[in-house]
Amino acid sequence: MIEIETCKSVDVIDITDRVLRTLQESSIENGILLVYSLHTTTGLTINEADGALINDILSLLQRIAPRGAGYLHDTGDGNAHAHLQATLLGNSLVIPVEMGRLIMGVWQRILFFELDGPRRRSIFVRVLSDLCEKTG
Amino acid sequence: MIEIETCKSVDVIDITDRVLRTLQESSIENGILLVYSLHTTTGLTINEADGALINDILSLLQRIAPRGAGYLHDTGDGNAHAHLQATLLGNSLVIPVEMGRLIMGVWQRILFFELDGPRRRSIFVRVLSDLCEKTG
Amino acid sequence: MIEIETCKSVDVIDITDRVLRTLQESSIENGILLVYSLHTTTGLTINEADGALINDILSLLQRIAPRGAGYLHDTGDGNAHAHLQATLLGNSLVIPVEMGRLIMGVWQRILFFELDGPRRRSIFVRVLSDLCEKTG
Image 1 (cartoon, chains in turn green, yellow, blue):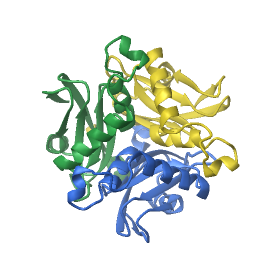
Image 2 (cartoon, rainbow over the protein chains, first blue to last red; image 1 turned 90 degrees about the vertical axis):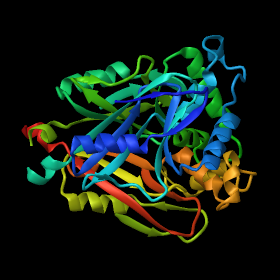
Image 3 (cartoon, each protein chain N blue to C red; image 1 turned 30 degrees about the horizontal axis):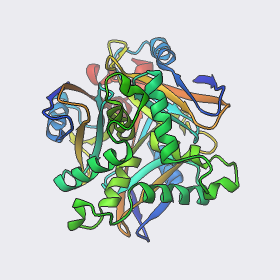
Image 4 (cartoon, rainbow over the protein chains, first blue to last red; image 1 turned 90 degrees about the horizontal axis):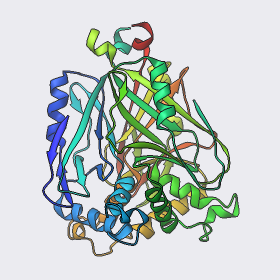
């Protein structure tokens, strides 16, 4: 489990290295890796970890689902926009594993989106081996 | 396979308990679970099962891809908006399994979106064990 | 690995048959299949392979994240819109496998979206067996 303390209401964190560490601890050589956020107002996506691009993504999310736009859910927590933005991003990623490494493209990084912080957030990482298929 | 008869043109159904039942029948302790909708005008997402929020999500989908907005595909079935909304939500979910339970956050529920009902819908659930990695 | 040479700046390719061939080569009977694009300006989605609908999806992406709309990332490659559209589609798909076949609905096809071509693109396919669960 990767634990993150986010610092702002909206925050994007590159968690690629932490995910890699979990993969190395598993000592699994071939299979797949699942990254799963346990929250309903966060998102996970794979893209380039360029600050300008990340701000473009945040602007897009804010344009599609702006904060406080008269949502029904806002009579409660006032965070409906964060739920909507999270729905568009999705809360999990699956990545292939080969020879103990993640199969990712040159520009691909695993980005965690905090959309209703600051909060303590938990991301579960599970590595699944395909060992049995080869030896069975 | 989870079979659902939807009642309206647009309908959101919390299928968490039915998915859990499939997990229990598999008697798999650790691994991952895949929920997969076999349709092109439905969606699956994980979020809070709050009626107000669900209506906010439906309003967002209708705002992004409104019904009958002059789509090319509408000369056919007239359901292009449902295909577009389904594309934004995605048609599958992957969830970690630990000690026979789904690893989900307090507010997370598995929501099935009917976007072109009423119809009979099928959702496939597959549980994959990581048993072999531990015993291999 | 599926290698594709895209021909246009925006291009949609039905890769279902190529994915099926990879599945057949694996000779795995039951499990899941992961399709994973190694790029940050491409997308993968499952929907109907109807030309009119595909154009509707491309129009939607162009409407949500139009090319050259003053993005911060555009001072670099000028392809921020492609990154944003890729984020909305996602870069991977997971599909159940049963008796050596993909469990997909009648209208479902695996669609690869080139959003910043023409380029050479790579899509990784991994099949994971649940054999061990049954024999373990």
